[in-house]
Length: 108
Image (cartoon, rainbow, N blue to C red; front, side, top):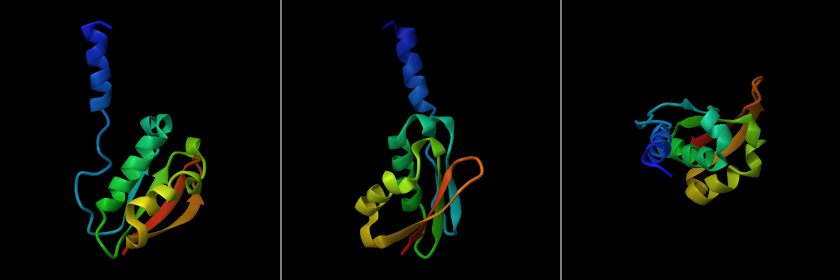
């Protein structure tokens, strides 16, 4: 691999911005439906956990996950349980017209 292609790969990794850069003291939605999310279920889970971590107690975040990964119960709910246990509650809300899925996470 030459230096140009190596730098290109590093540039691609640098393009993945965090889902949020601030703590939300309100209810909000995290968009996890970008093309990069379709390519990586692990990125969806990582950024979903980050979104919940950036939501203050007493509020909720709607995690809008990419439809390519199917219903979030199959891959996201276990990760939320491992990360938050009793500190949060989540529920599947609906499938969007675009094919994505909405999970609402209430931070306790």
